Image (tube, rainbow, N blue to C red; front, side, top):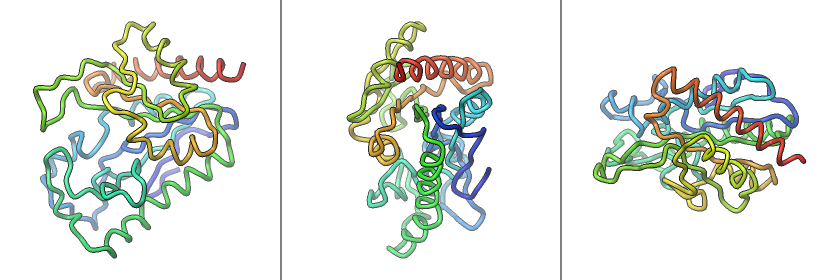
Length: 243
């Protein structure tokens, strides 16, 4: 199923695993002019590079489905609360977004067109086919454009807020694969966790926030490797949670 704000891949099943990727697309609708260089749409400011292909592979596995954002985070950032200023960003990683400098009515139009349909649909999906585990899938840059000297050593980060049930299980499993794993790195889920706070924490659904470093999933080989890894680890976490 494809709608303007989201895509659903696979068939969600009760007690299955749901992959949620807020920043899976760099799409900008034809009637929206962000006022930026189009080349920025292929960079991290616009999209979590690689995650859509990983999610597509995961959604093809038994017991998995995926719910993906279908517009760029520069159009509307789904992983922000409605009242957050960055839900329609004026700037990102040193780049101004002049097409988003509009009045309150313009901001409300973006929320009504993208943010609310996305979160309404995700809530309905979870209610109709309650998953045993949600995997929140993102990717991060090896370094920020604004701080290129700060290299990020982690190949994957695990994020969570108050509910760390799945994260505590996932971290050692990722480490067993020989990975450098960041616990609440390069971001903390206690600071940036809006979608999971709304749809997982508030409903008592176990979840794990996964941040894969972009260079791990820029090509088909890396995407296949990480889909297999995350599918295997998520299935193990789900099993351990239900025992």
